[in-house]
Length: 62
Image 1 (cartoon, one colour):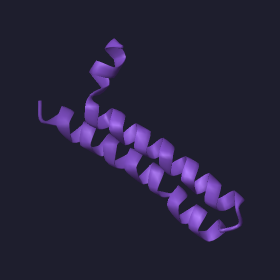
Image 2 (image 1 turned 90 degrees about the vertical axis):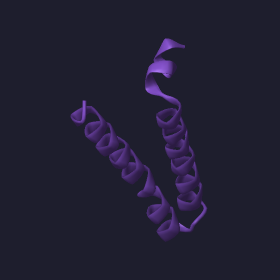
Image 3 (image 1 turned 180 degrees about the vertical axis):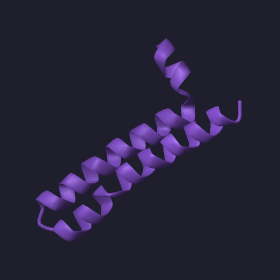
Image 4 (image 1 turned 120 degrees about the horizontal axis):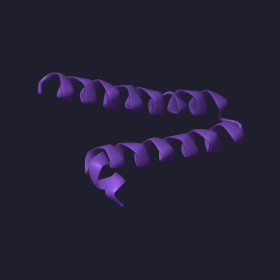
């Protein structure tokens, strides 16, 4: 539980959102809508990249 406090509410929400995006993309891809599945599947790494960038900017300012 201490890990979740250290992670922060916003980061935890973003990680859950990325997991949901991956599940939706897999569903779309496997049901035959492959182009939309690929498009939505690219959102997860983009969000993770934004999270990493914001963490770097936050730690650089301290």
